[in-house]
Amino acid sequence: MATGARWGMTIPFYDRSLADSRDLIAELPGLGYTDAWSAEVNGVDGFVPLAMAAEWAPGVRLGSAIVPVSTRGPGLLAMSAATLADLAPGRFVLGIGASSPAIVERWNAGEFVKPFARTRDTLRFLKKALAGEKVTEKYETFEIKGFKLERAPKVSPKIVLAALRPRMLRLAAEEADGAITNWLSPQDVPKVRAEIGPDTELIARLFVCVSTDTEKVRELGRWMLASYLTVPVYAAFHDWLGRGEVLRPMHEAWAVGDRQAALKAIPDEVVDDLIVHGDAATCRARIQQYVDNGLDTPVLAPIPGGEIPIAQAVRDLAPNRE
Image (cartoon, helix red, strand yellow):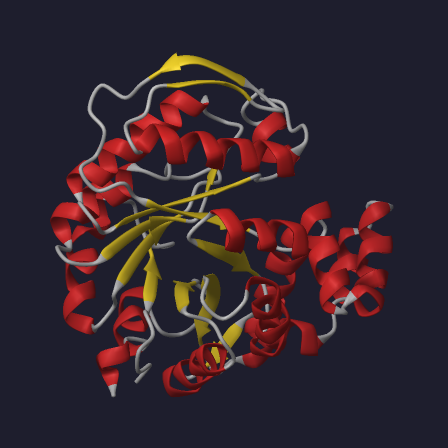
């Protein structure tokens, strides 16, 4: 179906634990999925699912989308990445990013300071550390004194950056191996692609609900969108994409604490733009639009709420389906 494109799946799955995901993860290669990508918010961590998938789904590329740069020290981040790179030589991709104040400060007692600089500095440190160099360097946001991995990976992993707006997208293109984005429509892809050029890998997590109950999907989608798009970095992203005015009523209602009004203020077309839904064939065609518009690696995240169970959705959405 997606000739020349990668086709990823988010692991573990929303309706089950990592322990209960083994059999479905093991199915991914046979279904045609090329990638398995973890996430790290307030559920599983970003590395253990990939370590398990390295054994359960041999051959698939494994990636983190994303691990925050401010919830672990740089050395620990290097050790975790080196461990995965050793378990899956040549098929692990380390995705890192600034994350958000809620995750870094409220949940992890860290400091969300100078997010762009912290991400840039962490990227530069990791490139040296994962290559086996001894690092003694003062960066803008931290200082490293004499760190060297006990065992550097034989194949240093690629590093990709979570990037939503031009400065971070350009950093991803200039110094990393790719960019990861989120919450965009197929029509938004060319604008993002223009910032990174034709040769930088562009990865995006796409939330998918296999369901023909449009109103139910939109109700679910509004909750998801309100929780994300009110975060300052996503608000700025969608302002840049041109949705500032259409989302203004949502932001104003949210700012005064009126959650119900905020939900009602999100137009149907915004939900339909940003969440893939419909029957499986409609969803696959929509995902293909992202690829046709310049997305290299769609990473599907089937969400509950549709009439099709997630395990079946994973199978029905697979590139080998057709």
